[in-house]
Amino acid sequence: MSLIKSISGIRGTIGGRAGEGLNPLDIVKFTAAYATFIRKTTLVNTNKIVVGRDARISGEMVEKIVIGTLMGMGFDVVNIGLATTPTTEIAVTLEKACGGIILTASHNPKQWNALKLLNEKGEFLNAAEGQEVLSIAASEDFVFAGVDDLGKMTENFTYTQRHIDSVLALDLVDTDAIRKADFTVAIDCVNSVGGIAIPALLEALGVKNVIKLNCEPNGHFPHNPEPLPENLTEIADTMKSGKADVGFVVDPDVDRLAIICENGDMFVEEYTLVAVADYVLKHTPGNTVSNLSSSRALRDVTRSYGQQYNASAVGEVNVVTKMKETNAVIGGEGNGGVIYPASHYGRDALVGIALFLTHLAKEGKKVSELRATYPSYSIAKQKIELTPEIDVDALLIAVKDKYSQYEITDIDGVKIDFPDRWVHLRKSNTEPIIRVYSEASTRALAEETAAGVMDVIRKMVKK
Figure 1: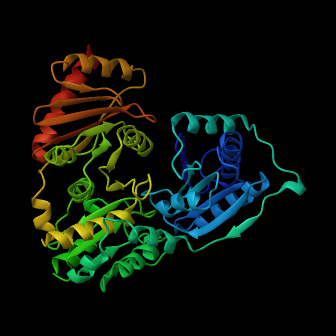
Figure 2 (figure 1 turned 180 degrees about the vertical axis):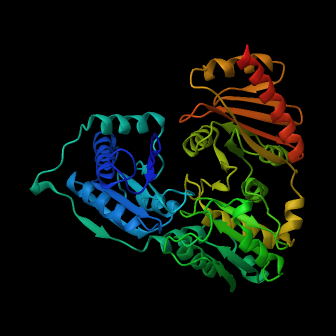
Figure 3 (figure 1 turned 90 degrees about the horizontal axis):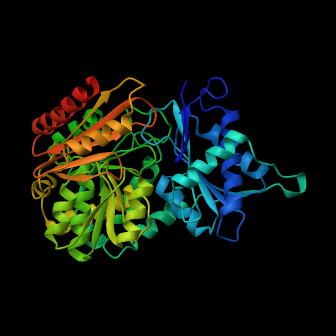
């Protein structure tokens, strides 16, 4: 059994002893710690906290414990039921709530669940705030409400539709263009809440022909739910049959979007953000942001419009912070996470689908043809396993010095920008390894570049 406590929330496998998995006792402790933190720090005059969940098998159990605990802490709970992560984020602001909890383990397999914690803006807590929640939980420094001060629960299951309405209202979403294009769209919603939200969105956008794969929100994931190529063979085969113009795949909480070309080829998750940014920049000049481990293609496309690209540390909250600092008009992460401030500051596959379909309709190209218009890069992901006694921070400083003749970024590990490729080294927070991400014009070259840096590190370790 696994229980991972991090600044972004708590996640773990269901069952086991207290402290070993995500069980009722730990759910209560961390929910109470979050409620204590919100009570102390909220900037809004409200007593409401929003709770939404994906369709995981354990979702109902976790939901009841979280809601009961929040009521026990004296908060009024708005239960929005089965809802995507971006839907829950939007609900926090529309309810003028002081926070929100999303019950989802994102792309993790079905035995996992998690509590993702939001502030009054419907955005994830930052590192300092997350650490304070962990400290409160560790000390169990919380006080439950007396009988006269218990919170109440109300249910509001309208937020999926309200989320869709907000997407339709975006200036750059053109439902007439999408309707006229008469797309046939295949979708794989991995039997979670995307099976509710995505068909409804497509219908609202004017898409009449939808091929639905795994759209029953029962939590029984038909394949590994992370939308990576090796997990998407079913929809790829559907696309190869020539039955659809485009395929969309989302993860269980619908904040990541993968696109499949009409011929069954992967558009590649990194290029979801690139394509959407291309469309946004064409109509809204401005800056862009992605994290250090995302493709250089976004930088290239941004500069082609004469605009500025900026990189952030890895993590959605870091991307959002950099986007606000630079007034970015579009940003996100290379895992298919599109963040469009005109909607809200959160990764949102519904927004991504609507903007991409509008872009596709206006370009009049096949998906594979559109993909071919973007700079072609390939990312490789590897790791170096180390012994626990090795000082990883000192090792990364040594690597930084070794490659000082190149452009170095050290806001999150060490990223070495060679003229035509890059390598990003990040220390794991949970195990003695260095994660190695590299990008070049081909996967072979990316792997070769990473191997060269990894060889340097291994030689340093032996000294």
